[in-house]
Length: 552
Image 1: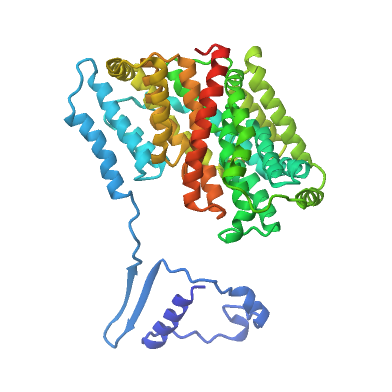
Image 2: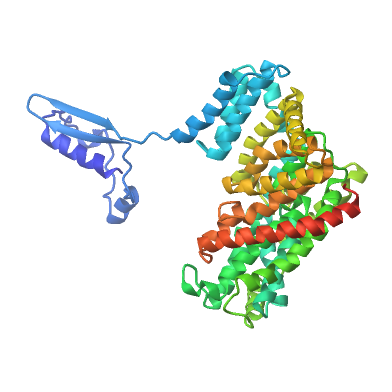
């Protein structure tokens, strides 16, 4: 019962002159109501439960005078929540300037030019964030329909895109790994086998992430749900505490090593990160179709990614050495944890079997006519039928539904820009500019790849970066004469590698930095150094490997 209203009612009725009709005097056998038994203290406790905090949707005040009784209610004041004004103004200004100030080229239609202005405002909003990404994308979608730039069916056409639904389902797979504890178990086994030294511990964690990456396509889920809890447990047992000088004993090195290796683990497999699938879909919109995508991706990324995975822990061991070199207790701790976890559960076995089936069909499914998204749907159906996941698990996976909302909008707009000739016009402009500089396609390739990588300092999302710039940079590559498959795969690899550039450059970077083991200056310093190391490995080793594979 609301204590405020109780006090009010008591005060109101006791202080005002209100007369009620007297109860009629009836014989005992004709009373209107039966006489209930007396209420005991226990009954009173059951009848009235005190709220921990009174609920006051409005304030109530009562006044009592001889000539006037009045009750007034005042709505509770709440702050108006809306967009950030400056980012909103800048995002809208970009589209308005393009639409009404910049002269439309003669070989571009008004419909295409208007769609470009809306698209650029949408992209600006993704970068500046006047509203959450999904909300801003929905506003852009609405603008295309209200202005009659696109029809309703055309604007929503990308919501049936197979690749986008494959990405959505991949988030549910990641939840399955976390919910069943399978990812944690796999990583703990590697700690048990390789964890006698700090360097061996790092390699064990790195290899375990590379192993589960193709079936757990969320780098953030791998970081926050599997590896960070293990790293924190090992670090605390060694006396390495977050936000403390002791952080550099063990935790700082393990966190930074795992973060830098995560990018290469994601780049190794097509299904290791959601943004990989986005890249290939956008490449397809520009006419660059990768045959047998899972195998083609793995072949192209295998050698440079594996080399990077092998050298990164060692390089960081020298650049950012841990104070604790040996961890003799780690294998014993891992063994104890495995004992506490008990034998592999039924749900874990189901998860293992389902993921083996999914990866097998991703690799060989094209040969038997089963597409990647059908494979993902089949695997998710198995997990739902056998109770490993329930529908509430899927509904509460907000990242999946948010990605569906905003990326479907971008893909739909990008496809229509291609259909309306904007991409062709932009490609011709870029080609003319590059030709004026007399750059060969290898030189243009290097310049564009470096620009695409370094501009990520302005982004806080890998998928957001892909949605904003991947198509434009791929179009520039094609205009400069770079082979399509090489350009598409190299840009996609870069998308994974810049995830460790800063503490805000990706979901996993934010997770690891939030653990409190690495200082911010070290994040930027090591992020830039390892970016240069990866650039050399992927340019030299990757370049020779891609030549051998015939990509150019």
